[in-house]
Length: 249
Image (cartoon, rainbow, N blue to C red):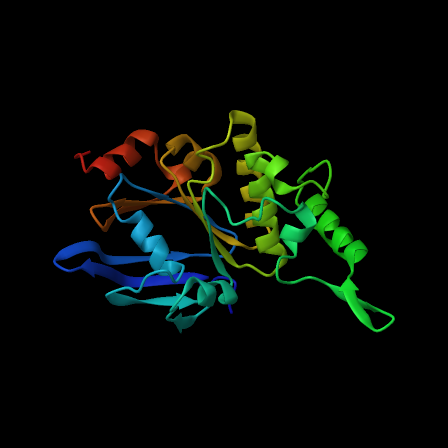
């Protein structure tokens, strides 16, 4: 795939629920290493669009291309196996086990001792330690159960796990809604570090200041349509608000 080609292309995505049109001819591209903020009021169509991208819902019309190939996901598992994943506010970590166990969930390393398969705990610990250090994520003890970690630390584990296992596009649904100021600052910095590794990132947020801090572009939705697509360096909060509300400039 050409590095200048889109990682993800949405072509005229529409979604109808009976007589209700939730999405109408939504088209835009996302590139490797790019952070795109998806903005819009409640009911604008953001959640529906994300579910379609992530395989949780089928579009009524339109096409999705990923790495230049047309895809039709029948489930989130299919999208995940291709390299697309959604990270929600409540995350998908198992809180009653430690960081290492969560990082390797379903991918545990095994060695044989006297012919008996056992977990290779030392190697797993080393892999997680290196992955988190490379990402600039500090967690005092990898043997701590996730339930005792902060929201920011949990988010860091999930995102770094995604990158380590070959993720290519991550959809972040209101990633900082439950975080404090310092945790949010670290989270924004982490998103930029992850994007720098060539990962495409979509951030769904209601907090415009965060979008301006972290995104390269903003895609604004209103009433199921694209109201505007702007580069963050070429626009202002006032202009984005006008796109969200539909007020004339």
